[in-house]
Amino acid sequence: MIIGAEDGGKITVGNLDPVLDFTDVRDTANALRILAEKGAHGDAYNVCSSKGRKISDVLDTMVSLSGKDISIEQDKSKFRPADDPIFVGDNTKLKGIGWQPVVSIEKSLKDTLDYWRNFA
Image: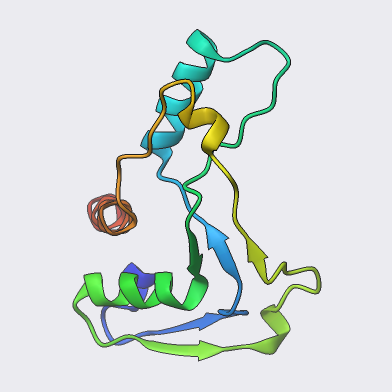
């Protein structure tokens, strides 16, 4: 949506208040590799950053990274009735077998924007 709005468009969004835990797919893939090698069979592990980020902050970062003036409009009809206000995991157990997230949220968002610019 950001890429499509870079030429003077508008983005219509839902609830920007929830705080969620974002993990880059490269970190997730590495976590799955480490789990396959070192994870205890039958145990549960949280693949997550353990850092909460407000959706509005993530959107602001993406708009900032785009370098364009993008209009954001909130539409209450896009709100989900079951939005958890805070949904953040605990990766302590996964870190205990050698995993660590290394891709920052800023790099993840920038790489996502760059991918879609090249794809479109």
